[in-house]
Amino acid sequence: MTDGMNQGTTRGQSACEQCRIQDRVLFADLDAGDFSALAGPIDDVELPPGGTLYHAGQPATALYTVRTGVIKLEQYLADGTRRIVGLASQGDLLGLEGTVAETYEHTAIALHPASVCRIPKTIIDGMEPKLNRQIMRKWHDSARKAHACIRDLGTGHARQRVARLFLVLAPPSTPRCRLFGREDVGALLGVTTETASRTIAEFKRHGLVAEVATNVFTRDIAALERIAAGDEG
Amino acid sequence: MTDGMNQGTTRGQSACEQCRIQDRVLFADLDAGDFSALAGPIDDVELPPGGTLYHAGQPATALYTVRTGVIKLEQYLADGTRRIVGLASQGDLLGLEGTVAETYEHTAIALHPASVCRIPKTIIDGMEPKLNRQIMRKWHDSARKAHACIRDLGTGHARQRVARLFLVLAPPSTPRCRLFGREDVGALLGVTTETASRTIAEFKRHGLVAEVATNVFTRDIAALERIAAGDEG
DNA sequence: CGGGAGCTTGAGGAGGATCAAATCATGTGG
DNA sequence: CCACATGATTTGATCCTCCTCAAGCTCCCG
Image 1 (cartoon, protein in one colour):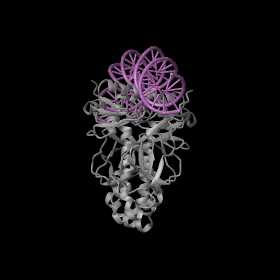
Image 2 (image 1 turned 180 degrees about the vertical axis):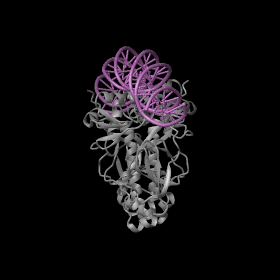
Image 3 (image 1 turned 180 degrees about the horizontal axis):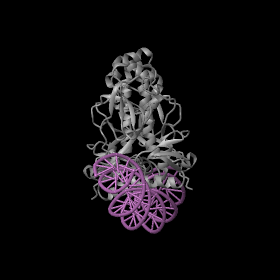
Image 4 (image 1 turned 120 degrees about the horizontal axis):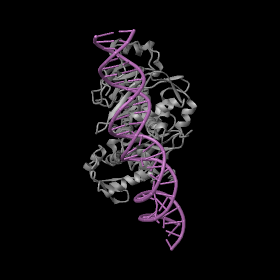
C-alpha cells in the first residue's frame, strides 16, 4: 500500500491556449472563441508520486488530461488482489467514464510526479457536439490501450512481458525511459513483485537495459524486441 | 487454426422496429420517424461457429450489433501468438473503432452460431448527433469489458480464471451457459489448451459444473465464486 | 468402418510463487 | 555530517503450478 497523500495542490487557472500539448488534448479542434468561453474553471493539479487523483466508486465530477508524468489505473478483485489495468501519460484523458456514468471505475494514482488538467463535467456537457469527435477518439485510444495491455503485457513469460513493458514505456527513438516501483510493475504485468525485480535485475546484468539513475533506464531496443518476440539468447 | 468459412449468409432487410433486443442496441432512443429514415440498408448476417465477421486491418465499412450468439475478438502478437481480447454477446456493438479509424482492430469470429445486424458506416455518419450518447455508452461498455478481462480473466491461478469465466458467461440467475472450444478458452484466459481442458474436466469431476449437452453447462454458482476468490476446498 | 479434429489424460521439467533474509536507498533526528 | 530507522529492492531456497511433449480417447462425418 503506497498510501501517499491523497491529493496534490490545485493552483489557479490553466492557460489552455498556451499549453504545449494542446494538439493532443481534448480541445484540439476548438477555435479561439471557444477557448475564451471555457477558460473559466479549468485548473491544474500537481500530484506527487503515490498521490491519488480519484478513487474507484467516487462520483465522477471531472475529466483529467495528463500534461506530464504517468498515472496508473487500478482495479481490485473480490479477494482484494490489486491489478493495474492501464497507464495514462501525456495527452491521455482520465475519467472518461464520467461522461456516461455516475462514478469513476478506477483508482488513479501517480507513478511519477504528475501534472494534470482538471476539466469539470459541466464544461463538457455544455459543449458536447463540438467535442464529440475528439471524445470519441479518446475512447478509442483507451480501448486500444486496454487491448494492448491484455495482448502485450498479459501474455507470455515474465521475461517477454518485462521486455514489452520497456518497449512500451517510451517510443524507440527516446534515449531513456522512466520505470516505477517493482510492486507496480508486478501488478501491471500480472506477476509477483519478486519476479518483476528478478527479471529486471537479470536484464541489467545482461546489458539489455542500464540504470543511469534511480528508475531511469537506457535500452537496447533491438535486443528487447528479440526477447519480446520469444527469441532466447 | 479454426479456419471456418469466412462469411455467413446475408439475407434481406432487418426489421429494427420489431427487434426483440431493440432497447439494448444502438438505436434505443430513436423515435418512429427516425426508424423509417434508416430502415433502408441495414441487413442481417448469420454466422456459423468459426465464421469470420471481419479481419483485423480490413477497411471498416460497418458496425455490427450482436443479436444472438457469442463472438470473439482476436489480436496477434509479433511472434504470431493469438490472444482473445474480448467477447461480444447480445446487444454488444462490434467494430466501434470504425467510427474514428479506417480499419478494424480485431478479427471477429463467431464462437456459437451467431446472428448480427450490419449497420453501414454511412448511416451512422448521417445521424451522428442523435446517436452520440448511445455510441458513447457502447464505448464505455467496451472499455469496461476490456478492463474486466485483464482483472478477472487474466489474474490468478488457472482454476480461478476458469471459475471467473463460468461466472461471466451468463448472469447467475441463468440456469445454463454455453462454453466454447478449449483452445479458445485458453486464448481468452492466457493459459494453454491443455490447462484449460484439465481444469474444466476437474470442475466437472468435483461437481462445480455439469455438462448437460456438448458445451452446455449448469453451474454451482456459490462454489465457483469461492474458487474465483481464491478459497480452496 | 475409417479418418480427422478436438478433447482428455499422463509424465517430466521449467518457470514462477512463496517464504524468508540480506542489501540498498531515503529521509530523519541527533 | 553521520548513525539510524524505514521501506523498497535484491537475492536465496524450496515448492507447486502450469507448460511441454506425447499418447489415447471420443465424437462426428464421410
